[in-house]
Every structure is written in structure tokens, then in C-alpha cells.
Image 1 (cartoon, rainbow, N blue to C red):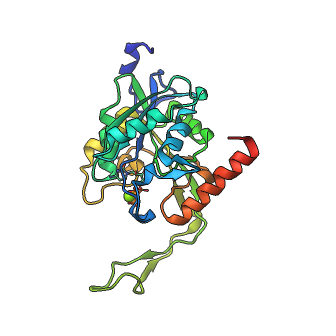
Image 2: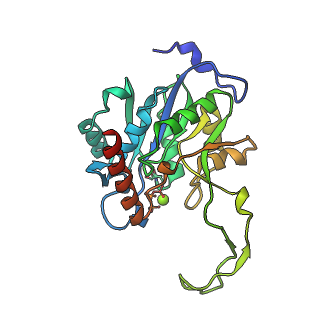
Image 3: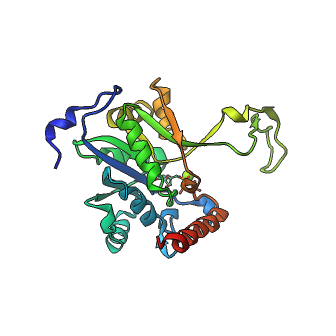
Length: 267
Ligand code: CTP
Ligand code: MG
């Protein structure tokens, strides 16, 4: 067990941090509307195993991660606890604790609830979507290392491959699918698509969530909340396999990635 005295170390920047524990909050309380009908997205199977179980294993495999907080659908915490007990972590995950807490109406609320479950000795927190079940362990470790190296907020990201257009507000009474007016074309070379796990100095992330009340659909990106406080956010290289399962075609891709892993390294 780490020394209790280390929990006081919450400096927002600096060359390095005194070492407390690193925890990962996994928001998994969404319904998965864009995936279509069925069970909550995080509970749907991928290669026969629930997506959430893949996500928990992926982050627990990181040597630096010693606690995972799963944020379950509001009425599904008991179901998720049972599911995780039925799919124990492999020995390679070492001694990683897994807590389950109920989530909220928006992702932002769900993450905030996960943060309240963190014990005092955690000083670095990652937030990782259950919907990114195939993130490689190297990406997780890279994010932890950058936070431990002194960055208060670290986000894995990839260059954007599609050209992106900004549109204006829809004309009054416009139906979905109606032509939309283009107002700008941002320079693609300056754009990045962000992924998770996003990593933070714990005190910074907690403050960012307290600072920003959840409105409407809430924030879909934790680093965005930190940016709004004027705290610097940095990007590190993400990974293609950390893509988010959002629409049905993403499930096809995820199954293909799993099949390739099984064929090449018996994963
Ligand atoms: N999430 C959450 N609580 C919510 C909404 C979302 O914990 N109230 C989680 C999802 O479970 C997912 C992550 O946030 O792991 C990213 O959200 P997204 O991909 O949008 O998932 P869903 O909200 O489930 O999907 P959709 O928006 O299509 O309904
Ligand atoms: Mg959503």
C-alpha cells in the first residue's frame, strides 16, 4: 500500500510528481443510441465478451494502473458488478481493484460520479470510454507517463483524415438531411481527432468538473473542461485501435481487429 502522506501531492505542474496511485474512470453508462436497439452499448458483446470487459482489461493491463472505477448505467450497477465478477482480470493485470458506481444522464455527470469514488491516495486519473475497448496498453502507459512527467492534462490524438467543414445553424424548419450551409473549412493539418484515455492531475480534473455545471448533453470531452479553466492541455500520439465504437460499422471493425489479434498473437 502506498504511504498516506503521498496523497497530499497534487501539484498542477512541475518536472515530476511524488507517486500516488493511478486510477482509471471508465464511463460506461450510455445507452448506445447510435448503435441501434439492444442492451446498453458497454454490455454488448465483442468476440463473445462484453465491450466493457475488454475496456477494463485493456487499462488494467497497464502496470501503472492500480484501480479502475467503472461507471455503470444508473439502474445497472448490480448487473455490471456481477458481469465483472464473472470475467475476472487476467494475472497479467496484477493487483488491480475494480469499483462499480452508478452513472448519470450525461457522460459528464457519469465521469463526475466516478471521480467522487476515488480514494485519497490517487493522484493521477485517466478517463477512458468503455466504448473504446481495444485501446493498446502502450497508449495508456504513454498518457500516464506524460501526466507523471508534469503535464496536468494529456490527450491521445490522431491527425484528421477527412477534410472537415463547419456549418451554420440550420434554417428554421429544416428537416434532417436537408442541405446545410458551409461557413468555413478549417485547415486540416491543424486539426486532431481526440481519443481516450485522457489523463489528468487529479486535483485539476476534479476542479474542472466542479467548475463546469453539466448543461444539456454536457461535455463529451474531459480535457475540454480543463481547457476552459485556462489550464494547458497537451496531445500525445493516439492509436488507430483506440477508435470509438459508435455506429454499427464500428462493431464490424472491432470484430476484425480482435480476430487479427487472436490470429497473430493468440491475444
Ligand atoms: N457515457 C456515460 N454516461 C452517459 C452517456 C455516455 O458513461 N450518460 C459513456 C458511454 O457509456 C461511453 C462513453 O461515455 O463509454 C462515450 O459516449 P458515447 O460513445 O456517446 O456512448 P453512448 O452515449 O452510449 O452512445 P450514444 O451517444 O450513441 O447513445
Ligand atoms: Mg453519447
